[in-house]
Length: 244
Ligand SMILES: CC(C)(COP(=O)(O)OP(=O)(O)OC[C@H]1O[C@@H](n2cnc3c(N)ncnc32)[C@H](O)[C@@H]1OP(=O)(O)O)[C@@H](O)C(=O)NCCC(=O)NCCS
Image 1 (cartoon, rainbow, N blue to C red):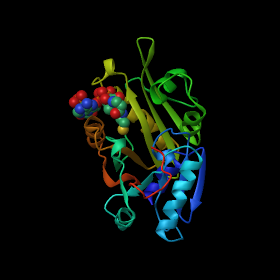
Image 2: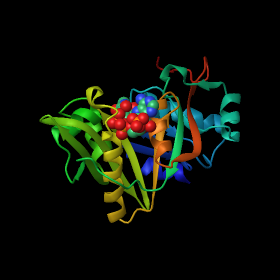
Image 3: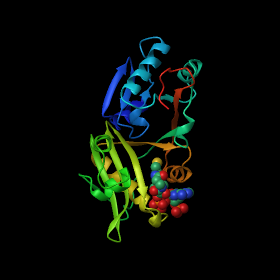
Image 4: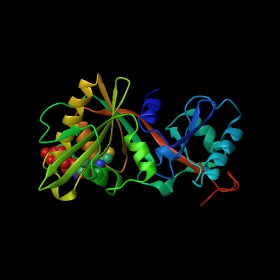
């Protein structure tokens, strides 16, 4: 299942299992790394599994959130237990997962580094010194740190992770003053070439529904929708000690 590949590309600080479900905690850094991935069978009745999600989350000080593939019987079953769409998380609560060929072409000055720089952290984590959770999630695994420098600083960055034959692309960002100059395309091409050298044959990435610019960029590179997922949270009374 492709969603497991994406999960492996985004390792949480702490993970537990309920059957096939993966319960993830990363001190609040990203919904993906702080939610339960409801793929496969939980191995127990759904109400008990959802209570387990609540206990895991609340014991670690985060809200209970479940990541579910959109329009599946799991969504219906979770809704029937009183869970609701995680609207507070908009525009990121609905996500399109895209797959496509490895990008190739001009890198426009972008390069892939073996180690993250402070400029890379600034663009991918919001500051030059990442938290422990940010460092763990973003730099664990076979990672390529893509950067493009302009005017003496880092103008754009991207994270590429190799999982099996997949390149998982995330945290693509170009500083606002440098946008629409082909820098993101260059970063994608550079990380695509790097991934091909690592043995990858295809690319997967996750894009929020509310990000039409990024969707246009990726669709222009031949990416197409593979599936969608959404985040769900307990409705009133569904998880009695729910944190706000
Ligand atoms: C999305 C982002 C990385 C694009 O960076 P960029 O350097 O401006 O992209 P490029 O110049 O390489 O764009 C290549 C093509 O992608 C498409 N594109 C890029 N940004 C677009 C936008 N805002 N609206 C519509 N199409 C867009 C266009 O087809 C563009 O070609 P064109 O400029 O000739 O029309 C940048 O806007 C950004 O950092 N956004 C905030 C972070 C983010 O959303 N990252 C993606 C997370 S999945």
